[in-house]
Length: 256
Image (cartoon, rainbow, N blue to C red; front, side):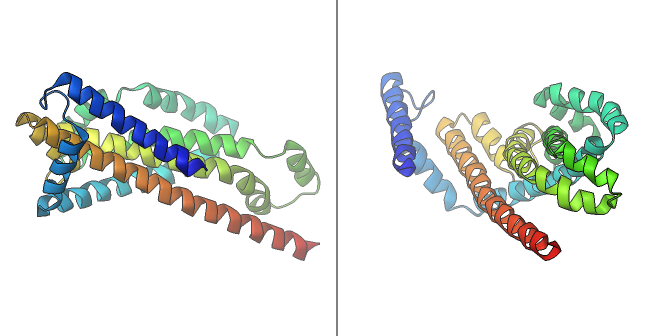
């Protein structure tokens, strides 16, 4: 049933787009969906198109993994230690408030073109992962923590059996948001720094050539890749959650 509504939403969006293109009557301003689809088909026949997808994907993957690992580490520490939370909070707030374009422009002074998108995406996605992890660690039942302290339960056992299960939904949600943000920031960084073999570089080259239809085609493939990666990660996250819950239940039964 929900799939029907999703398809209806897509069809409605394409219809509004088509009507707008008819009213504007200029491919330079707003090309029709059919012309963009044709441009995308033409791009798909070029090796540079697939190499650009591969280059951007690797940058997104690198930024996502690093921001996730760093955010997990700092989020867990901040969630457990109030001193660490107070120490890191100004940095996290400042990074969250920094405009993406400003960060990319500054990074262009520090790094070569291919590293600028990765560095920028890490700094933008890290606060998302850090905040989600910290909130998840805080979500643990305080009465269970007090009971664990009263019975002198080892810290490692408290972490794996109490804190991590309560934090897992927050961590997976934060990771999904960080993945989508990584795609957006990486491509934006590529538009400005223009590394070789990148979606953003192809978009910028098409803009300089005043090929609006091709710009739309590059944008569409970026949206599709971002949406597909978030969807696949969502499936993986659901599977991990189910497996983790089953494992925890089996351990509780064994202890019982």
